[in-house]
Length: 181
Image (cartoon, rainbow, N blue to C red; front, side):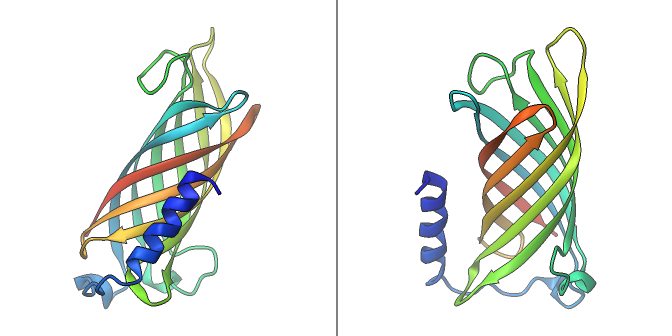
């Protein structure tokens, strides 16, 4: 079992005994806004070298989409990924991705403290550091858990599968903070 999968399992089990959160003021209308900031690590192939992955974005949940099987929240995200020869800091070799996404939030039985989500994204990645800048199509699919501290603050833990045209697929494990209103 992968470490992030183990962490998700533990958090979901811990959340099962947590007290239920109170409904958000906008729960009646079924809409909310999210600002998310996530940091994580890519396992770049070949060699499974850890690389930085920083993500910031906005999402808006639409109440009328609650029954849509694919998603109820539209997102826009910017991601910087380090592709240089050393770790987590900025290098000249990197990718800058702007992506639109569709997120599906879902409850986990017997808890309201921890919920889950799936997230499908598509966008453009700009690869830097070579003699010329290259733009490529980006596709990402993620599965994650949200730990709700209250109506406005939560932590997201996510595992994603990413594909950039002309680049081998790779996975990203991330953790981040979200502010909702």
